[in-house]
Length: 259
Image (cartoon, rainbow, N blue to C red):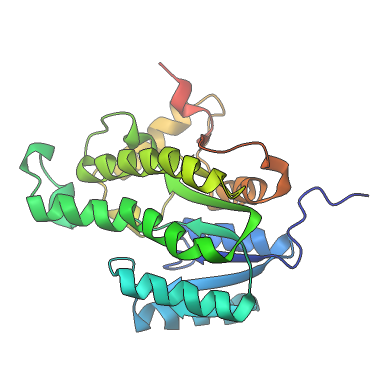
């Protein structure tokens, strides 16, 4: 039977694994099942230690583990240079990085600080642009890039505040990067996942209420899992989606279509 996914032995860079609950970890697990070679980036030494323990726990190999501070152009450039020099070709990139100061997620959006606004944009949106630029010299001519968004990018959701603005910017970055990367045959898309109990979700006020509302109102009457997102990510990184670019793919049990 023909392998439609064709990720066996392909080099995929995964950015953003913080712990076992991370969406990025769900993507990595699905990539392993598809036979891909997974390369990880991390920011802090303690993050690397957590990642190594996680890999050891599940007996997963890492093709590389590379330091990458997404708030530093120099660090991003060096990370992808190191990756490119070792593996030669990058077939896919998973950008699952987002962060905002806790104070800027509380209270009213109108009270967002200037520095907090800029920091959320830099970390959550511009980091995709910088990573795509640094990876570009090493990307295969049919490579695929995916990033992770959320419904708060297109709807005003209470408590999401500055992160919603950052996700809106992220989705716009995807659309504009489509033109540049398309010249090379490279695709880029966003996956807008439903709420998942990640470390970052703890900072969103009323998160448990959001989860309950999804179960009540979404067409599928359930919340999605990181495995659901991981499986869709494999499809978007594979040849199954070779004709798709510049899109936002919703993996949210259909909640986004509810009036």
